[in-house]
Image 1 (cartoon, one colour):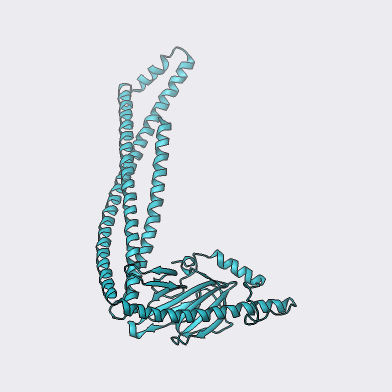
Image 2: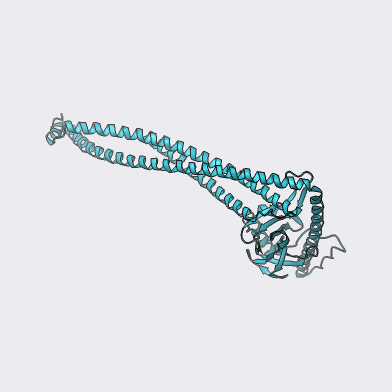
Length: 416
């Protein structure tokens, strides 16, 4: 009986711990998603009628719909976890009630026995009627242990009654939490329906004006190609500079310029660069988002079609992060500013920061607070992000990440 009780208690404990851990994880994920959705809602502005503004609003609302769908899925899993917890609590309450009933029955039996043998004379008669001294000693021990057993049973009944009361309170609180979450989930579903309607409205408008949108995207694509060509040239120059510096330190002849010979494959790194690169890699997924304040990723890395628009393909060498007007660009890691240049296509500043053999690129700055050669720390301000007054002060940082010449998806490196 004791072993069975112990096994049941262990099973309860394991189930309770696992359910609590699952709920904590789900609740943390839900809170993070809600914050991200709230931030992107602050940034959504589809009031202007330009092609790019509406396309940006569409990509932002597409992201919101995707995040809200994830949020609803998380809520469903959390509701299911709460339902499992309620089932477990009900089972534990039934087991406690059964155990409590059993203890009370045994306690009542012991009380009835003592009533029949309640006097000291009865107990002495029981002891001295033994056939021998050894039996008398055993009967004396039995009388003492039975009294102790009765007292312990009374205490155990009290403990089980308290445990039962706590479980019932926990069950009530869990049910209330589940009902509140179900209500919140319904609110998210209603908001999702509203967003889907807004998505359809923007899509319909863009589909009617798709020719103009394609022309505008072609213009942006040409500017992006020019910007990326300039970034590539600066990275080549940085690789050549670092390698020549290493060659001079080792007493070797500097490598010819890429104009005169085939460019080198990558950095010849110093010990300090290797340590910095290793530290950078170890922080994958933990690097700070390169903007201050609320943000939303509007355009993601790589080539992809815009959902709902036939033939509209975006090709992004980095990610576009929309922030609040007045936001600053900030360094994602310790490093050295390898270049600061102004792009003629839009007149805005761009900053390259080298972290060993990794390079982070910050574009669309209206002003900068660093210069070439400066050492920067993680989170240090690099410049103010441009706010477009013709597009509702839309403030977007174009951010890229390279490993030497190779383009990388910056999103997987950031702690969002």
